[in-house]
Length: 83
Image (cartoon, rainbow, N blue to C red):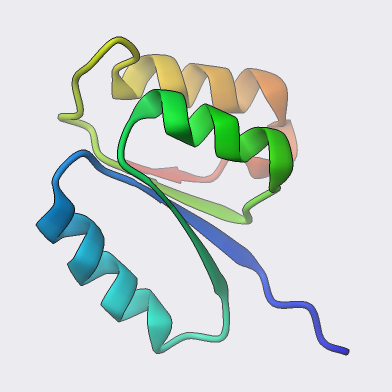
């Protein structure tokens, strides 16, 4: 069975998540969606995405710079971030 790559989309704006998910649905990949930095880090405990699309303007307790730094520290193989 073919295993599809995983893309993690992180954004706190629901409309942005919907649009990105629709675009990514056309590709042969699995999609993981997080609406906060905290949720993104939880997902990264269980998945190893090949690409992370991260909202640069995301706020909250864990802003996008902290999430990006944490991703690159935890898993250097996944350090492909588009902000």
